[in-house]
Amino acid sequence: MAETESPSSAAGSGRGVHELTLLMELSEILDRSMDLREVLGPALEAMHHHMGMLRGTITLLNRETGEISVETAYGLSPSAQRRGRYRVGEGVTGRVVSEGRPAIVPRVSEEPQFLDKTGSLKNLDPSEISFICVPIKLENEAIGTLSANRLFAGNVSLEEDVRLLRIIASMISRAVRLRQQAQEERQRLLEERARLREELKERFRPANIIGRSKAMQHVYDLIAQVARTDTTVLLRGESGVGKELVAHAIHYNSPRADGPFIKVSCAALPESIIESELFGHEKGAFTGATQQRAGRFERANGGTLLLDEVGDLSPATQVRLLRVLQEKEFERVGGTEPIKTDVRVIAATNRDLEEAIEEGAFRPDLYYRLNVFPIHVPSLRERPTDVMLLADHFVEKYSKEHGKNVRRISTPAIDMLTSYHWPGNVRELENCIERAVLLSDDDVIHGHHLPPTLQTAEASGTVPPNDLQAVLDSVEREMILEALKSSRGNMAKAARNLSISERVMGLRVAKHGIDSRRFRTSS
Image (cartoon, rainbow, N blue to C red; front, side, top):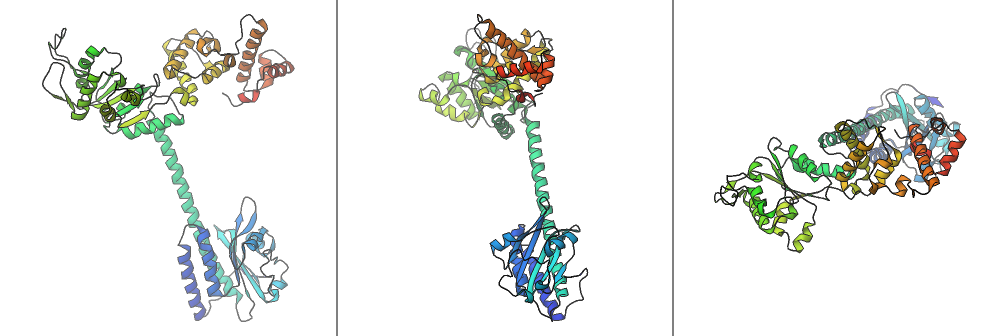
């Protein structure tokens, strides 16, 4: 096998014209697409037409497996391409990758290292076939090869073919490099975009709202979309989910943040005074109106008004509210002068307004005025992954508030908190944690500190009080769980902490059906 390290002298003028034409065509082909698989095939086809090669092959090295395989080829069937696999240093192709130098085989029949793994020369006379192979390099390291078969001819300089193939390999290498750089830049931009998206989410996530669940992320996205506008928002969700917190977040992330935030509970005020509360009244408008009084709409001018439990408004008040939303003006009770108002309205309700409309209890025209941008605030059942985030937050809050030093929640208590269905939502959870903090006497919230509604046999291990053995088993199980949690699942360490042998520990764990592996990643 003959080898060369330097290109031969320049070809004649006729050959030079053909080479220039080929190189220009290859340049255009390689620039067509960022996907190499779409351009390498046409590039080899152009080489066939201009160079008269029988076969053309491009191989690439897989650095992870160390295998060199055919990436694309001209004149080879798909099955032949699949057979073209080499190890580094194996055959002529493997040696070119290993040494990073071109190789010339004038007659493949005389070269024992020419393996013909593809079987491409099966129907040809190997004594009449020449093989040229050059490395494709990236930063002076071979990443593959470009090779060609041609009919042997004594008057054809294979050195000139090597020189041309090296130029083409350099062009392919440059195309690979550009695509790698583009891919790396795209990846960098995607990662940067994802990082910024997460950063913005975290920065925008209102400080007064706790939750990282998918359901809450959707709420944060909606807050981000609507906060910068003056659009009317309708907050829907069960009682206790935190609709007022969402309203606060919208207001304080809006251009009206420096204006007033006024809340009125439409369900808490008697029907006889709700209009006065909303719109104000003139002196003498009714018995007891000894002076003029501004209503909530007037006080909220330039800011935001939260109409909580808007579904409980009387039909008469609904009419007046509809006019304010349409005309942006109102009159005080007992007054005749219209008062202009610049108020953003956020309404909240836990009622099914569509059902109320069917029953005639809620005006459809008011519903459509309020339901411009609805936001569903999920119940705690819809965001179970947020339960412990909220619980930890409330433990910290009420520990400070009541001068306690509660540092953690026991495993049985965690099981009870996460398995409960929370019909009262976040408000119920907050009340439970405050009670537990007050009851704790060892800086830990245990299962028996939680309300009776959470004390299920499955979650707490409780049994009828007249069964002594069952009570002892329950206490034993809780102590073992606590020891395993403290030792992060280390059975030997947990046994030492409980002053029992590892054998006894293993028997007790098996008895209570405890999987110690669940604690190995717990903090």
